[in-house]
Amino acid sequence: MAFDLDTYAQRAESFLTELDREYHLHFSGQKPEYEVEAVYERHAGLFGREVVVALREQVEESEGEARRRASYLLELAVGGYLGRASAAEEAAVARAEADISLRVGGEEIPYRAAPVAQANEESSERRAAIEEQRMALLEERLNPLHLVALERTRELLADLGWRSYAEAYRELRGIDLVALAAQTRSFLEATEGVYDGVVDPELRRVLGYGFGETARADLPRFFRAPGLDGSFPAERLIPSFTETMAGLGLDLAAQPNIVFDTESRPTKTPRAYCAPVRVPAEVYLVVPRVGGREDFAALFHEGGHAEHYANADAALPVEYRYLGDNSVTESFAFLLEHLTEEPAWLAERLGSDPAPVVAHVKAVRLYFLRRYAAKLSYELELHGGEAELSQMPARYAQLLGEATRIPWTPESWLDDVDAGFYVAAYLRAWGLEARWRAHLRERFGERWWAEPGVGEWLVGLWRQGQRLPADELLAERLGEELRFDALAAEFA
Image 1: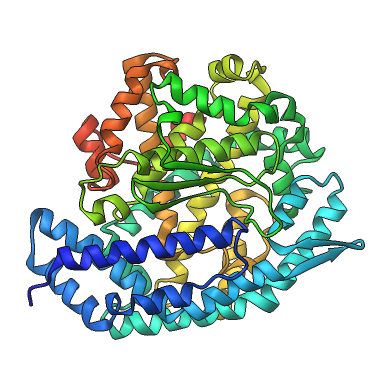
Image 2 (image 1 turned 90 degrees about the horizontal axis):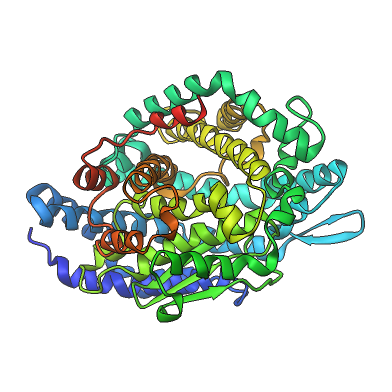
């Protein structure tokens, strides 16, 4: 049957704006309630089973741009269909995260602030106590809700004809997840011999001990690396970003559509984020203050998202401004974040000695690349349709522990899983960012971040929104193939 994509897309934009605004107000700590159920109910007509079936038929019957548009809208419709069915659990999780607290040594710590408390805690025993309580609350209060949502999602996808969540999202995202997992396994094998030598010295420098003693509870402190605070003065946080954008030829003062939020609030999520409420007219850049290097990395990362959304062509179809392959927007986020570890940038913008920063960030980067490589394998097992759910906490801990060399807590086996295989978007984005960075160095020089021509080049990419997926965009712009395992060469 014919499906009116334009009408559906206009209605979808209203939904996405409301949903992102609700997300922003709650997770920035400005609104205690997370009324996502009401948002879904107001737009229930977008996500009926019959709409999903009609859009799927439209994808099968179309070709070219019409097929691309329909496929992006189909992914939204399926996500909305599943999201509406689990909206009550999602809202309950958000309420619980905002309401519950840990009590450690007589101090009350909001649940969401626990990683921040660990990052700023000198005592390993106290970090471990925070982790123990946080995992206990996760297991008791949140995992039952996550599990209900997962089982309901499986049932709904089976009703739509997909054998598993993994099969559904291979089709919806147009990404060969099995091939990507083969690349991630190759990366793990290629970096197996260098991992200890890169990461262990940094663990010892920051924590005072290395592999064998480091626990997951220590990781926020490791990422925080307070010994590097002198290299990242707090008063330079916003100015360094503003000056860097100016060096690229981008005037933030002329971009009122980007709104900064760096205030501390008790229920503010510890994860930085960008909320593209109205693309490109209203984009929020939210960065919780943890301190030191992480604040800079988070601001530049989310700033990459914000610039991408804020520079999208307003005339693009809704699905190219909001939807598509998020590997693309993540690649721009990683590109700007990488500047906070560039030796010349550190010396010129912050007046810092780059050597200790570069060594630390290299270790953190390798840790995350290996962690996410293992996470993809885990999620393919979790969502493959054959695994016994009762066995998955142990399997999660095994795969993540083997990749990171750190004993892993099994309680976050569901909490650590993002919807729609977003893990694949991160992995592909790391591969894409490396190619952008290499091209910019070759074309504009080592100090490409101080060349106004780079801003013009980037805006040319940003104006496309996410019309093309990452592999097609890279092939079109640079004539190259997108591969994650190629990143292993950076650590050889």
